[in-house]
Image (cartoon, rainbow over all chains, first blue to last red; front, side, top):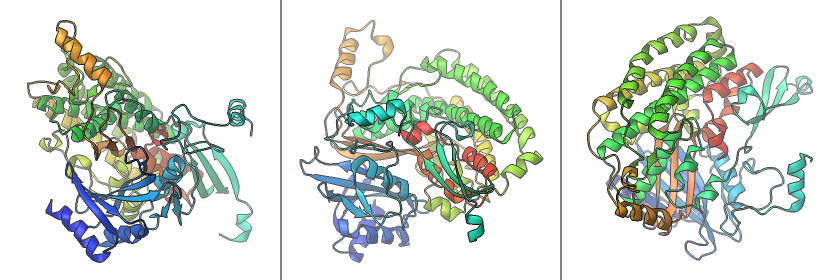
Length: 169
Length: 393
């Protein structure tokens, strides 16, 4: 537990404006990061010998519109250190009206597909991503299905349904 | 690459219907002669929107959907999800249930690795192994049928424990399997481990260094093949794995052959864990007794009015965990399987993100095959052990 606290403290000492807040729930540490600092904070946590988060477990988007009644998205990073065997969760809030954030593919290559998925599902733009294209939904798909305002049964234009049914381009 | 050879580059499609892509994976290959210049995986053919569906289901209702992720290892998927919800609710699972979970998960790992071995060898041209592995899988499917009533989509693990106790005769049958299995494994090894064709097709193919493997986020046997000794069962033990005695095998060279050796040793270790869990299986309850969260025992439903009401309440009303978020991961046969659950305090999960190991492992394919021959692509796909149900979700 003491170790968890130092991670946040060290990050705060390095970038005082980067850390907005932190929380511990069920033994998991969450640090809220300022959007402008995500790349620098990630790089620091990856390279700093006391945190050494060499492994990005997961990266995903969350639509906060029904959770906090705010018009925000959140990008959530789950970091793990294979050497030191500890985890941390970074959360970055971005406005839903203009969802963009810096990529972390230059730090962890595994972020590539995770970021493409977050783009596909939420429409979050990752600045500097080498190949930001849809990954799970088919070509020509409209909308971002994991947004809360997207209906469960789907919402695709009639013209597109015809294409899929007949297999024509 | 010189300009003269670049003109020869040809783009071909491998998949989505191709026997060696293990499902509906499409690879866009750019080839110069037989050498791979670029590979672009195209996925999503099996996308069913499981994460979206989860937001419209109650916590208990989501369990059958987890079976359909990695459909070769339904128990591991069930377990990862159940552990995440249990952590969110902060409840304890009885010791017997934990041991039953270990037995089922290790049998699942054996079953999943057997299918990997069968198809991987078949892809490379060794057909005999395929028949042997499927013979053993048949026994395992019979065992799963005994406990869960189904052979494939088991949904046996529940929030708070397992669906029912082990049936009579299960332990004896499993013991027979465990005792036989070591000899069977030796048979497979005589067919492959020192087979000259097998060595030529797998040694030095699809090499990835330890640093790259970590940076690309590989997990499970794929990262251990590169010499990284990391197993979630050891580093963050769950479900009483800390009481089991087993070793984590690692490779050295990070090639297809080392990943093969790692998985074979894992089969042996899983077999041993199953034996230990059966030997030390404690008595007690198979599901926690927390009436407002956990479903009542099935056998009580026909006799006790209270159980029936309780069942009705939990099924219709759902359970409402406290608002918050958890991330839990388990060592699935393919690697680190994680569930990130955000709860808003209502009966529906606000968001569930699944971290599928195959999705991340497949990402590194470009690193492994560029500059190699087309035939090596088949060997590498086999050694990554991907399941498209989990990649596309």
